[in-house]
Image (tube, rainbow, N blue to C red; front, top):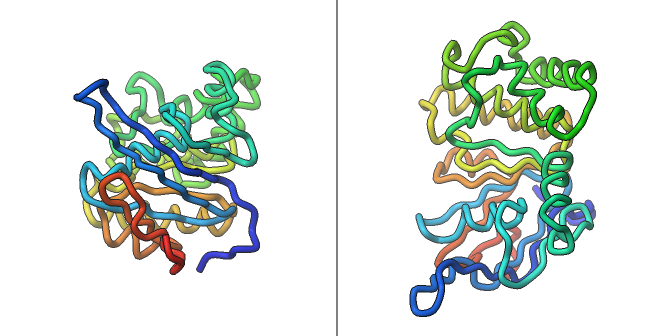
Length: 236
């Protein structure tokens, strides 16, 4: 289902990442290369400890790499200082977490507009964009509700709206259905698929769920810090 003629949004080349030092050093990523095209929905699967979340954190700029390169939309993350990288993440990427990561003291609308305000967008523009994002995920009528007043499925929809509010080049999702029951998990995935089609949004999803993988365009499989199947049918 992939289209090789489309531009790459993400290119990871020979990425190595380790934690610790000396004899206690653990090599989590051992020369990982991955290419994600515009508009793809890619699932990353593999056993616990295989490097899935570490790869996601490195590609999204949350973690630095030991060696190798990661480019997002042609921009090399290694060439950015911390300030530039923080702004790049805020303006050109979106994040969906298993635990929602919503601020309990803020309403749904305030949670969604927060990334824009932090990035320096005017308050009026931030509010309008946040309202549009909540409308996209079907939560217009929950804008004034706090996280504790919403179901898990609704909270994850707010998280998705927050991830999309800046119309990012790519959205990273770490176990987006992990805290949801099967019904809400299915609804969240159907929402991501709709947004992928309507907005041509690119998603990279770390998951343990076969259902999530089946609903994605392709599935990348990792084991022991390596990609053993990139889902393209080509040799890795």
